[in-house]
Structure formats: C-alpha cells, structure tokens
Length: 198
Image 1 (cartoon, rainbow, N blue to C red):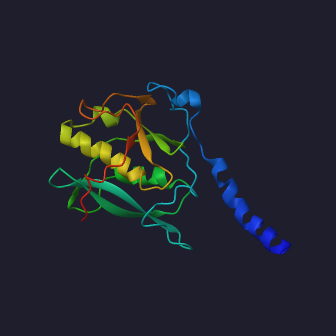
Image 2: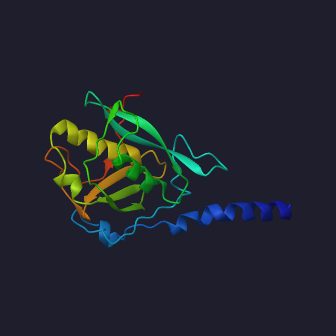
Image 3: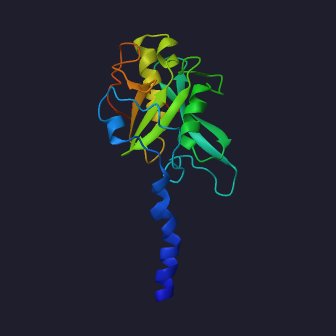
C-alpha cells in the first residue's frame, strides 16, 4: 500500500509544481487600466497552455494551434489550424502565427502590417497581450475591421484552457479602443458568435 502512495506522489509531484514557472504581472502592474506591463517578459507555462483543440501530438516535435483570420465577407472569423515546432510558449507562438497572416488564400489577415507582440503574461486566467503601437497606427479602421481584429486576438488566446479572458495592451498601456469602435479597456471574453466554421 505504501508503495502505491509513494508512486502516486512521485507521479503527481511534477503536476503540482508545474504552475510555479509561469510569468505573471504583479498586482501593481495590473491594478489600473493605465498600468504598464512592458517589462514582463514573453513567457508562458507550456503545461497549463496546451491548446484546447487540436492538441500537440505526444512524441512529435510539432504542435497544432488554432488562430482566427477573417472570412472574405469581412463579417466572420474562420479558424485556421497552423503547425509549428513544439516549444514552451505556445500562446505566444499562436499570436505570432496570427500576425503572420493566413496560409489559406480564401482567408483575409486581420492583423495590421508590422504588429509585434512585446510580451504576454497570464494571471488569474487573464492573458495580458502587449503589442507594439502598429496595432493602432497601422489599423485601417472601420468598425467591422476593429471587431474582427479584437475578436481574433481574444479567440486565438482563449483556445488555451488556462486563458478565459484577454486584456489587450499597446506599448504596455491599456487603451479605451484601437480605433474608436470596440472597448478594450477591460479584459474581454471569447466570442463564439463571430466564428464561422470553414
């Protein structure tokens, strides 16, 4: 009996300590909408950020991540499954794939040219995605475009089970909107109604 208990403790120990390496903003950094988190390095805990679906294939050196690009009609987001080398920062990789544009020629990119992720931190199931100012300055504007852009970022990150909401930051600062149409001053939840399956 004691061997079984010891074996269970030995097997469960890595799971109990896996959340200890996650980089999170401090309380001071997230206490107000105008707080700065630019100093938070881009890092996430791979064990808690396994993609919801489809997941990385055990024993393989690749992972499959779902990102959301725009449909040609400009009203919906379409999920696009992308393959990337397996790494310890899958949520960051998903945002980088989103920014790189779609592989499918039937889809339209939602991210403006030149957008870069400065940092990504997770705290209390909220992802703090900090982008450079190109997310605002290179944004073509329009309410439909802004809705799709914000929803693509939020829906891509909420593919990960440990992320329930997303706070979009520009150069470490919370903003009211990107182009005057969608409130991004607070963490946002996933929007299923804007998704259309291919």
